[in-house]
Image (cartoon, rainbow, N blue to C red; front, side):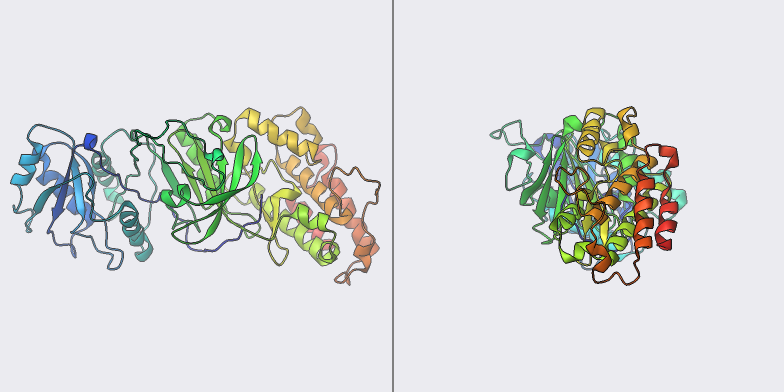
Length: 487
């Protein structure tokens, strides 16, 4: 994977990006409601009032009350709801035009299905701006039956969490796209050489985007409509370097093939995504967002780096690659990141595929580990392929020949191999004639004032202990860090 960089340090977004439903004729009547006072009435109260006021017209299956992106108040000019069928629904709704609803008169009209005063993206932006400009806490709620009407879900959530505090807005993520009858039913994200793009989505299916710290401004359209170039491929997925057209930011999109992802219930998968998304450390590449499509396709969004990975850095053989200060700093950074994964989270996260290609460097040669926990999202076949590739490159711990799952000890083994890569300036599998254990130039290079042959020997011994054939004899990450401090 290429290098990433983080461009945001804002708080974690603990709710999915709100999206709105494009209306179709099959969904029922679309009713515009205007005229209500917006300054003093919470959006939830307005929603409950509208639901009650228009309940006699038919079942309300969707209700949207967006906020103005500048003033952050409820926008009374573009609110609308849908009536799902029912004889005479249109006439009943129009009959309530001008009627009093709790102190204000409603203005009602039936909208054509292709007539929206604001686009989907604008509506999404209005809702997002609310969370950015207020200090209210966003809470993600999952597990409900998403086949229920959105308004029923909103009402139930409002009542259920009423004791927790004032609820200002409730968003139900259930976005649809209408499929063109002229477009083919099958699609392949990978077949598009210059775009990560998919518009062939059944209108009866749902898609979801969950964002984390640094990815609060992402939308589904941003991801699916971003021009991208392929920068890496494997049998289980593809990496794209994508330019988000709305923000102009460059991101890495990791597409996971549906046939390669693990089969489990939605909650279990969601828990894994949240676990990976909430991980933050200066030496780890963050997950900014996760998109789940309606046909099982999945996209992970990361920041993009341009300086390359540790493998390229080592193979370059440049002056910076043999500076002891860089070698020790990179080793320490990788060890800190691994220690955070193993001990700094509520539940330990096993990397499972640590190698020099998955260590990215910034312009100051500070390491960032990528691909951690990826095996948790893949099925057994794809996970085994990761181990096979790791074995072919020399990073697979010997016990994994018999064991199916990676462990903390196997991660430490991979760390030891990387340490040997750094001091030898060679790849783990070396087919050349150079069998030197380390490059003597390290001792004479600029930046090695504090290094002696004894210190280099301690480093080499630590690397070898990490690579012990017996997992029980390998040091843990905290022990590795302590020994690095003594060098």
